Length: 295
Image 1: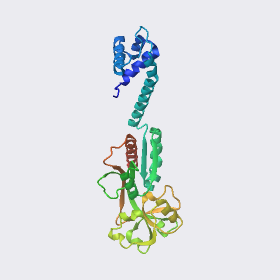
Image 2 (image 1 turned 45 degrees about the vertical axis):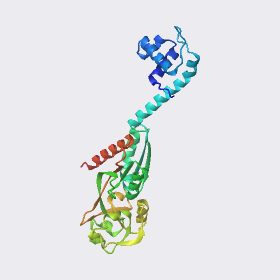
Image 3 (image 1 turned 120 degrees about the vertical axis):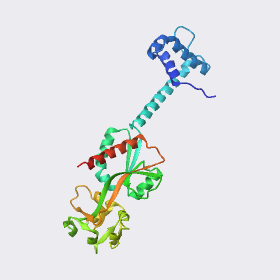
Image 4 (image 1 turned 30 degrees about the vertical axis):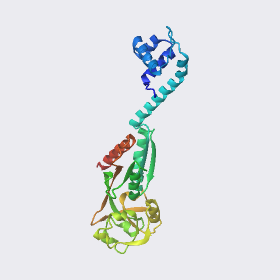
C-alpha cells in the first residue's frame, strides 16, 4: 500500500531534526508547538513508526535517522520541480522550435530573436528555415511549435494569424535592363525567361501570368535561387522580402497591373494549447509587426 505523505509534514520533520527542538522548529515554521507536535504525530501515524524518541529533546529514533536523508531528498526534488514549473509558466524555461521562410528569417528574426533571448534566456530556441509548404507540414507533425510563412492550404487543423503583406516583383541583377525601370507590368515580362520557384504557385492562375515563360530550371531554396540570380543566370518573380537586406548585387522592381501580394503570418496547431515560450514569441512578433506598420 502506497503512503500518502505531504511535503508540509516532511518539512516539519526536517525542521525538528535540524534544530533539535520542537519549540524552535515551531517558531521557525510560524506554528504553535502543539500544532507542530500534532503534525509530526500525523506523520508518524501514517508511517506506523516513531521518528523521535519520547523525551523532551527531539532525538531521532533509528527509523527517524534512516528516513532523514530520504525526506530531505524528497523535499529538495519537490522544490526543484516546483521552481522549474514556475519558470516554464513564466517562459523562463522550456523550448521553442520556430520554423520560418528565409525572407522573414533575414528581415525580421535578426531584430526579434536577440530580444527574445534577452527576455527568456532559459528557453532553448531552435530556428529552422524552409519554404511555406514544408513549414506547414512541420507544424502539423509537431516538429515546429510555431511557423512564419504564407498561408498555403487553409488546413482546418491550423490557425493562421496574418502579420504583414509582401508585394511581388522582379528580382534581377543591378546591371539588368529591368533594373532601370521604376516598375513593370506583367505584360512587360513577355519573352523574358524566368527561373521558376515555389512562390510562383501564388500567382500561376492569374490571366496575366498565362504568357510567362520559364527556364527549364526550378529552384525551391531561396538562398540557392538568389545565388543564381547574382551570377546573372536569369530573373525571377519574387516577393520584395526575398531580396537580402542592403543587397548591392540584386534589385527589386515592383510589378503592377495587377499588384499582387502575399500575406505572411504565424502558423500554429489548433489542437495544441501554446506553451508559454510560444506565447512569448508570438507577442514579440506582433509588436514587431506593429512597429513596421508605423509611418
